[in-house]
Image (cartoon, rainbow over all chains, first blue to last red; front, side, top):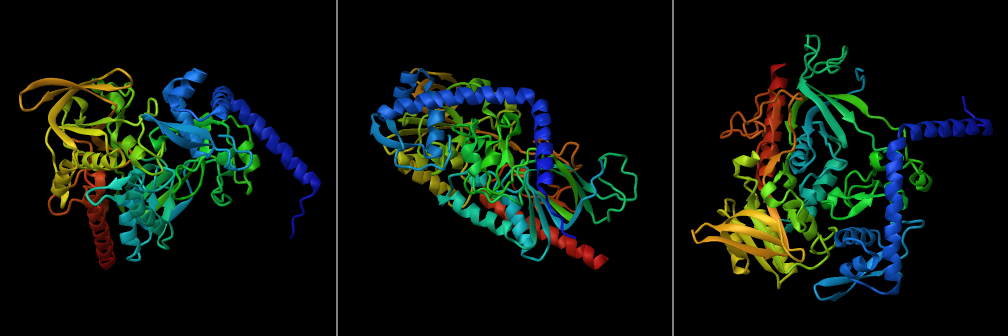
Length: 113
Length: 450
């Protein structure tokens, strides 16, 4: 026998899922709050890096000094941006490499590193 | 709750590293049905995370990936990744198990030799629906340290562990997920499942091979080398990632500030052969992998000074001594000394204080990057999970170490690779073939007897 999913059934499923998600969010309240705080900070710091790189390519110490971030943390972010294709390695300056925004690259839609 | 889901195999291989993969292939090719249970989200073990292997300098990934693929596509081999082994023991169905492993001796389960209780941990992704497109990873807004890259870069809360992982399935780090729903919206096949729960099942098998491998002694436990708090002092597996072409920086850079290091030092026996760390034995492979890494560094940074502080060089395998001599000829400096302590130096350097073994005293040197060749320790403790015996070094006991090192004190249970003690890849592969042969012999004998 064929089961026909009516609009009513779909609406009911949607409502049930919504209620289940609400319950799950309640259970994981503390974890979600911590993850949200982390995400907000990361988004701010990544935006600062990208804004600085819009002007010119720069080395890790130059970026770190400009945005007042520890150099190891800056490198951690830069390695991640590079992994997701948002920056590219530019020329070398002394013992450091410069990094530039990857303007030519088309990262996956809605991508946010 | 007693799991009702039971799967029957000829052999259960515990661990999906190179030892487990080789054992599974050797048995699968003979027509035996094999289950490989792996705790990580991908098979491949430590070897898939290495850059190159000694003494041939072959690409580790180029050797391991075909084996991973062969196992994944083998008609006689079934993979169970991201699973926890809760218990493994002889099947005592019908007898009183003394409730040692609750739930394992479920009524109605046919006795076939060994029985393992496994938990499939939730990935929060439906493995049937997922097509491995990584759209979930791209849109996820939360970054977490990428432990596949030694924590030197970040990944997303939902991600495929590494590019050539098998299976190509993402997993969600639920502790750091904020349930924003972006991954669910981006998934083209509706594979995201926030409600996934751990699932328990039973595997019965005639034999089992333990191939659980090793871990490195954590640097944080080493007080004299800075408890992992000194910048630019890393362990050898982190260095493997720096040397790998798909590593965190795609080149060798100092983790503290991205500088290309000009002076690099290896500290041998960092943890090994040291009773105070609980690793009184020699880890056997550190000399050779340090030499290998030094040679690779010499290729990628030809102007850098590379020094290896060692107590004695143990180049025991075929071609290893020549490899060592080649390294010396390439200009890598070997200093026979015991490093007493490492402190934070100036400008991100690490200050190494060492005692020269020729009796000429104590010296200090500053290096841009220091790699600690940490001791190898067992990755798995059978503890209350499996009644197989351990040696005083905590590795699995081989009851006949000379004539058949893969035999354990449990009938039908064999051991291969670094689970039985530190060893290199060559010996691991050889031992895996041996374990497969012993398991096949055991099953054939049982067949004849019955």
